[in-house]
Length: 224
Ligand code: G3P
Image (cartoon, rainbow, N blue to C red; front, side, top):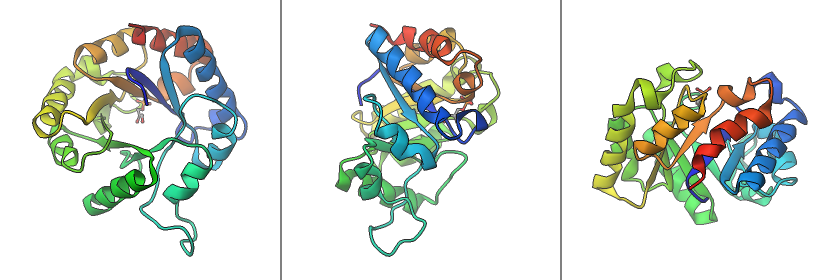
């Protein structure tokens, strides 16, 4: 996944139920093409195949289990996620936390299969611990700011810069992005200035009245 990147987590909002998940993803694809920047989407899991099969920008699963193919009813299996055309997965999102050993196992499984891992963390301390597992990306998201409209990059800039530093001390190949409360271009700008190589955004886009306009506003800042 190229950086700087805007990752749109569609979550499970009713605004993206059914084929609306694809509609939002198509708006993201159009903006990415128009501006020549990296935009990725994480649609609701039931719509993963629909979206990944129809667009050319990177698609991520919102969650994947460390499960194996075969008799693993109900699990989200890395091989099957890949077979749908997704390029990676979020792991340990605040709304889908997993124990540390499961997180570690999931990153290993994603790597085995050739999928990108974007592991979420809620504090710089957790970032430090997760960096040792060497995922491709760590997304720092203070839970209290998620869905608040108050951007982590402006309200708690030290959380982002401390996370960037924490990763640098462990393995600078691991890339840091940030999310929580990001709703404006200014928020994205602040995030990038703190050393984040991208942003993870949900409600600011999903709840916007004009998806394409909002994605454009945020993605503009990724132009270099
Ligand atoms: O995964 C992104 C997320 O948790 C941030 O949510 O609504 O604050 O952009 P939101």
